[in-house]
Image (cartoon, rainbow, N blue to C red):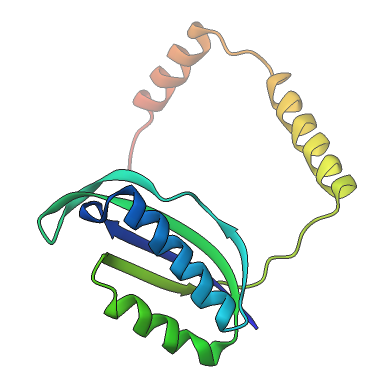
Length: 142
């Protein structure tokens, strides 16, 4: 199984009931193809950057799934045939490895130390800045 991210926009004319039934239909289609939904956002109404099929808004949903690569063409065909889906995108995503908590904590502490070390650098006064600018302007350029 490969990892995929699916984003689709549902026509607002479908209404909230149509949106919910379409989301359930997508989830059932993935389950029927022996896929696994790892994460699915709620389908929220959003203003679109530009109208799609004369619709200024749509219900946008993002899903992360694991699915056999051979089944992707079936899912693609499902999205193409559905009249309520304005746009969709299926992206192959690489599997991400999770970092252990202790390693994340260590990285966080180290980044905090480097930030505090930078803050302890010598403070620069306005006079030093003005002198540096005067020196730079007075240099001869060959």
